[in-house]
Length: 379
Image 1 (cartoon, rainbow, N blue to C red):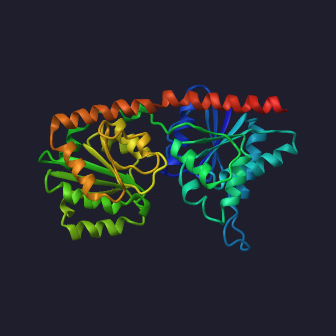
Image 2 (cartoon, one colour):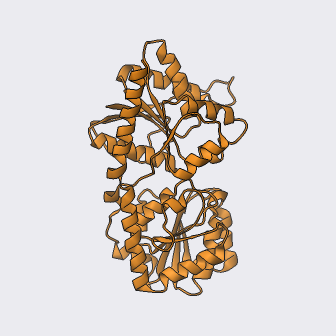
Image 3 (cartoon, helix red, strand yellow):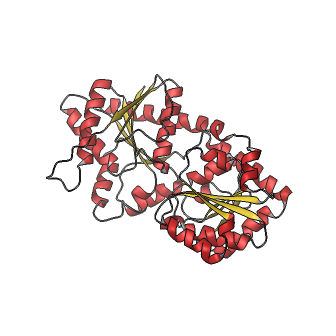
């Protein structure tokens, strides 16, 4: 099968999932074509089945904002025609689904019907999509897609609640490649971070307000009073400066490290003991799943799709977002007893196995075939 994948080429969840999906499909013998404005961050290997097509946007003085959606639609037409793709899989509704619809209409003039599968990832529905500026386009693009998937039951429900959707939405959860995350902890790395055997707590995000990174610092400030610990803050974003100042205000600077964006997140997770995710909203919680795949239990909010991933009392704990006291208590409970910590670690890994790439890939393959066959029946 020849599959076109459209995504944001960044470290964000939708870009990571789209890229890892494409790599997995290529490994299974499919020809995969990535179409985006930069090479995806995780597209870091060579394969005879992987191709990258850059979308170039011209900057004319007439345009205050370069018309990326139009450039993407034109590039999609070109790639579909000359690579003879069987299906387009677009990740994130804005602007990819609408650009795919435009490309599909243009391709009809060449006698080509390209099925389009749209995957909804979260903020394209819960944040950007609800903006009145975009809502009609998002609704139209989803309804005009030949297939629609969402990464959690919660996101599927929210999409139906906030948009007038006629299409059936299939839930296919996010995933991880367990082989990549099954690293043995590097003792020298752990010793460098925690020289006196302190517990290592970690948080990864894009440091936006919705991630409540300040709550991570507040939780840690309570935790460290009971458990000697170090906190690793991985990522970057608008809230980082505030969090750095909060560390100073709470007197925990010596035990917190801000590591910025990291490619090899699995190396950091492999030496960690606990993952904190106090987000106000999460459509799925891919960062938490990556932690669990490295045998790291999770203390998180119960927002969005997190309860579908993090099993309360088994793989970690769930608390209402904003409940800093409650999250700190659960973090202490996990870390204060080594046998208990090991049990949570083992449970986290077992749960992560439910979302292994080898289990999820066939769901997408079968869905592509289902959509393609449905289109043939209508023709």
